[in-house]
Amino acid sequence: MSAVPELRGEYLWLRELRPVDLAPFTRIHTHPVLTRYLGVDRMDERQAEEAFARCLAQPYAHPRRRHTLAICAPGGDTLVGTMGLLVEEYGSNAMLTGLVLLPDAPVRGHGHEAGRLLMAYGFGPLGLHRIWAGHRVDHGRMREVMLAAGLRPEATLRQLFHTQGRWHDISTYAALAPEWRLTATPAELRILDGADRLAAV
Image: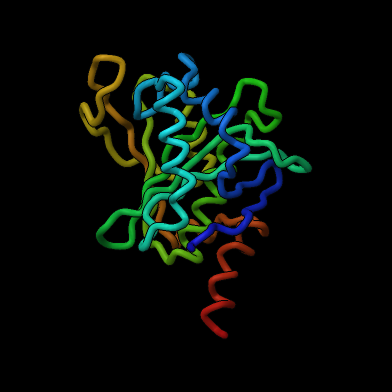
């Protein structure tokens, strides 16, 4: 099993999904507004349950490529959002995926920190060199989130994915491990350097 440890920041923390997270996970993936900008179409309840089961199985995959984590507020353990990291099968690269927060989430406005915690885990324990992310070009508010996460603008990928009956262009961003480390907070450095301590043992 390759479980991700709890990743704690100033405004939120990330953990592996648990069976008790099914209801909020389903709420997200069946919601017409929350799924508007995702790279997959809105699901019905059965599809959401099947997707959730696949997420619960991720820690048992070898090698593990997908990391879908629950976003929680400090002092709480309830899923208020999700975010993922997809490790690519070649090189030392990964993609941040699926940042979604529930409308009543107490961590709204701090979604970029979820990305930063996952990047610290990717650049640290997973030993990645490059992490990228993207958003639909018509989702203007995401640019600020990407920049706050320490990602730099790169390119526009034309008609990258098809949802809601049409193709969408995607604005992409990326960060490189040596550069991103220079911007890391103390909490992020603890995640990054945790891998260094393990390597030294």
